[in-house]
Length: 248
Image 1 (cartoon, one colour):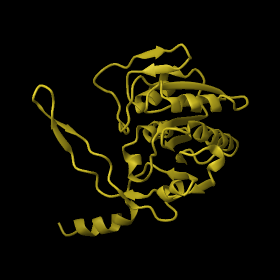
Image 2 (tube, helix red, strand yellow):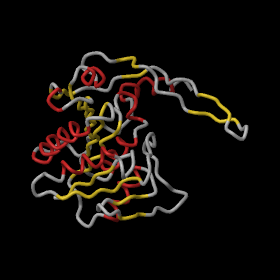
Image 3 (cartoon, helix red, strand yellow):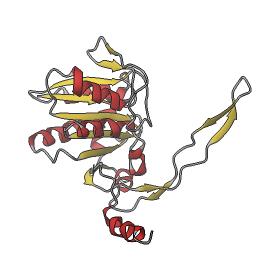
């Protein structure tokens, strides 16, 4: 069976190499890597529509694409894969994708594109930049279980791993997404030519990290697994909005 791997940190990222190394060890499984040629963190679900996409086969067999994580998965599943994959795995991201971060995450977006195209999908992130091997070993364990016991195809599993040695991680917890406060202000500066420039500030501080959240689990040394879905409809608000419209 075939696994499709991608990420948002770029095709040369250490997290992607660690993920490929461990998932390639799964019996009777092949891996195909299609990832952005450069870092696209924060790209969310964006597609490149105003310029052509180009692919490049690297010496290690990975394919780089001059586009976003979503572009990579979209192109792979619609054109590059000679064998339909059984699963899309995105990561391992350098830094966690928890709480509201999933709305901006290119890592999660790559997995979501797999879901859009009918495949089960997993996003894997490390809460740091050191212990990629720990995250890769947990990814292998979870992917093996998912292949043996599939979940509904409309779900994406968002996995976050503490940046700890493998034997220091306490286990796995199923969690909900936490929440952050409003993001920091835009930082204004001047470039060397005297022109005004702006930098997006750091994410807001954590607002909801209570027990049961992804923030809480990772902070306490557990791998967090959050099943997420794409339907953003606020079902409970439908009758309220319907009543509100009746007054027009």
